[in-house]
Structures are given as C-alpha cells and as structure tokens.
Image (cartoon, rainbow, N blue to C red; front, side, top):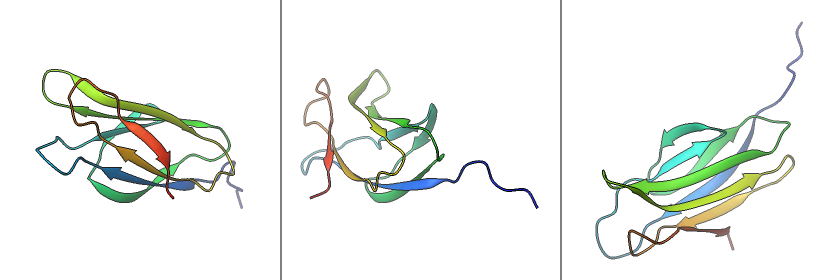
Length: 98
C-alpha cells in the first residue's frame, strides 16, 4: 500500500460584496491556479505541507481591481472574510472571521 506524501487541508473563505450596486464575481487564485468564485461562504482545498499563497480579485473586462493576497500556513484552522471595495480602483480587504 502506498502512503500519501501530503494531505490536503481546507480553509473557509467568505466573499462579501458591498450592499449597493453590481459587482462581478470574484476570482480566487490558490497556489497559482485561478478558480471562479461565488459570493458567500465556501471551503477551499489546498495542498498540505507548505504555505500556500491565495490571491482574490475582481475583473470588469478592462482591468482587475479589489485585489487582496494572504498566505495559508500549515496547521492553520483558517476562516477568513474578503470584502470587496466600493470603488473599482481600491484594494479588497481580508480579515479573520470574527
């Protein structure tokens, strides 16, 4: 029997948009692989063992904006919230779920 060399782990990410207006769906890049996201809460699977960089942004056909970057460390039980900016030239914010 072959033992797995690394185990996958998960972190919870809540994607929040501002209350007023239309905003494109966010894109979440986990360890260099882009994945379309949905507004709301979702669990994201990341490879185990090493720290993983996560980048979130919005794209409106001309430019990307609302970018926020964070790192998921091994052993972290992570629950984070991304808040999209009101204006299309501001950065997004990531904070721990409280």
